[in-house]
Image (cartoon, rainbow over all chains, first blue to last red; front, side):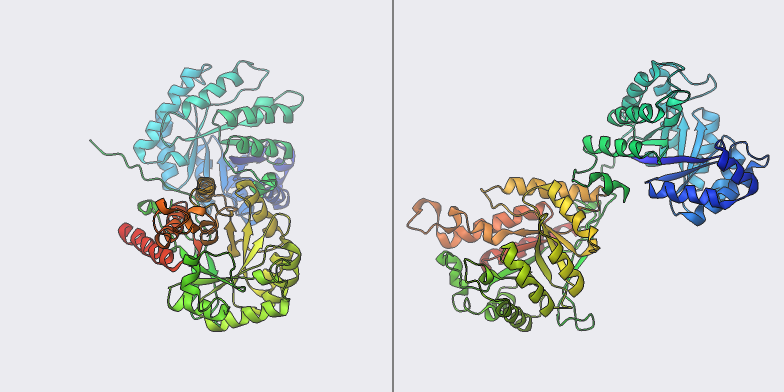
Length: 261
Length: 323
């Protein structure tokens, strides 16, 4: 699966401090550790550390690229910040993220094409995030057709059906599994299916256990990408094992090591 | 109506492995062989690059084969006591792409000859032919661990292919191949999981992945060919899907396994209803080889010149028709 490493985010106080002081050391340390842990993308989110987010994103991209060759995920809700990140990135990046409504897709899909980037689209529109299965799948289908129309291949499109914290609505994880299954039938080949995994366990105890249990269930239902804590070894092992059990890789006694190397 | 494009695209590619080294590269071979490079299913090459052509290694033994049927012995009867002449005949007369020298004579039950004698044999064959060499131990781990270091050293720089490393006995041979610049056969008994594991273990010792050829052991037509076929097919599909631990060329021991079959070796008087032995045996070997080619085989170890000729023709046709 594609593991999008979440730790370089201005919400974390050490990252926030580093961004304010423009201190590359903690950022590059996180970048290296996450790359070694098996990250497919390193997510960069400047958070609310500084007023000039555009400049902060450019700086983050530059210092991260000095530490690792792993592709970057440019994480912002602001178009200008995303553009600044894409411009600074040396290798094709991932845009995280845009809403699944036509007016946003009209901007972000061509943007992804222009920068040879991949794109995460959330199943939300003007009405917000549908709480049911059908509403999410409907938006997902609209996203896929908009992407295909513009010529963005499904292999570069990530549908994110938006995972809520478990203590907000406990029916949601079960719904999500069905959403994953249905998204897989929208196109052939299907788009990637992504979630922000750590959202699920916000405000709970046993966060790691909650995250990895859901992740294995989700992989069985077709999820193949997550913004997640790649430094959580148990979580990474659970993902690798789940994929092996789903016949995504051939078993060997060293199967845990193989994916990570 | 637009016809949908159903061409599959694969993300992986079979690693390229080179056998033999020229003078410039530190060896004495006039001919080198490249294997691998495929990035599509065998012979579905409108989906990608089929890679280098499969090659045929003809077996040369360092003892006179005692149990071979007459039909198989006949083409070699004047050379069986000289590995040097035998190898020459295979290359010059029968068109072998390379030679697989099988060091049976060091086996405790087949002569228990010394490492010095094995070294001499290897040197004489290297001098006699200009094609790359596979050097295959006697499959007795104790004797192989004694003999192969000497043999490997004697062929330093020739970039031979040494066989074979198993899950339980890989360290010596991997170290030798690394030190003396050879390639290595990793072997697993019709088991894709163990094959992957032995490849990982070998590379964990620092051995480069682009010097490994996989050997699943082989089953002949009627004797487990379907198991070997499906394992090799699964390996190749995994390779094309990006599993670098299985993205390696595949070797099959077609000749030896085919001629163990009673259908291949039975004499005319033993099986009057089965057709003439001189046709039947080579056909059995040919069909086994051609079938395994479809699963992605890269090196075929073969025996009978008639079968070699037929399979070479088939390889030619497979490549020409798809060009």
